[in-house]
Image (tube, rainbow, N blue to C red; front, side, top):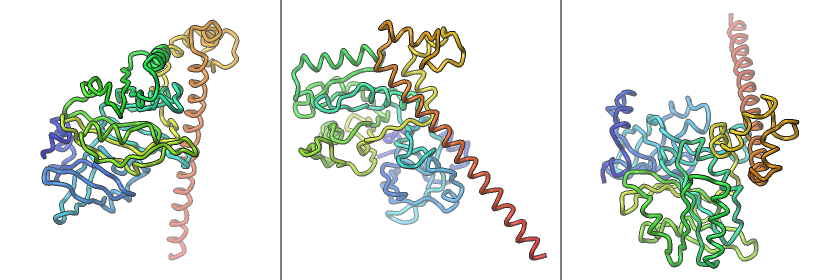
Length: 355
């Protein structure tokens, strides 16, 4: 395997030169296990760790390597390497870190397309699709909606679901497939291009691992059934992993996500809810929140059926989440500044005591 098979190109080589990394080996992170990584290079796969300097200079989790990253490394022995630097990313799929206010979690890096995977026979929700679309737009990643388990419902209902999606969401491809019969796979495979990277997004139990196995033509991901007691998916995939398909496409599988909190999503919201943003220009007040103001063009459109009420309410919810995330980021930065100032004063006082 060569670097081009992993998606390496002239743009990345230029970045390598610009950042004076010519004397290092180049590889791509294909798996992550609690800050230990598996890196694929032109010479093979290596377990890897980051340098102490890279760890010390990191200001947040986003400064650590993620699956899909291109890294500069030195090979220590036949199966171990040290990561010295991360090449600049052209895209990152991010969400709010679960249980960590004001922090982000990178789902995958250097992704071209995201497959938003939902099962049509359980907890199907267009609001959730809009949430994923917002993350994709903010990440500059092209989305593709993939509906699975179509063999469990009749064809007429599948068409109704697709029509409902298209009424609320424009210009996003929708593929309906069956992992069991593989109906619809031909259209999905035609989307996958050699050298492009695709990331799977979706809840547990929607069929992502089976989808990976079918696309690979062999069982490389563990699969499981839906829990009969909770009717929820089990977390079978426990870590992110990059896989190269037979047709040259590059696929990143992810553990199922029960929480999809949006982070820095101003551009993502504007793209996903472009009809609301266009109407907002006609509101009476420039600072209209589109909740209760007189002369709000958005509320008028909702009341007259021009905008889906469900989509409008989903927009308000995500706007509120975005504002809360931004406030927690500002609060965390203020605390960091105060701690830094306190540490500086402490060191200054210690120095004076020694004098």
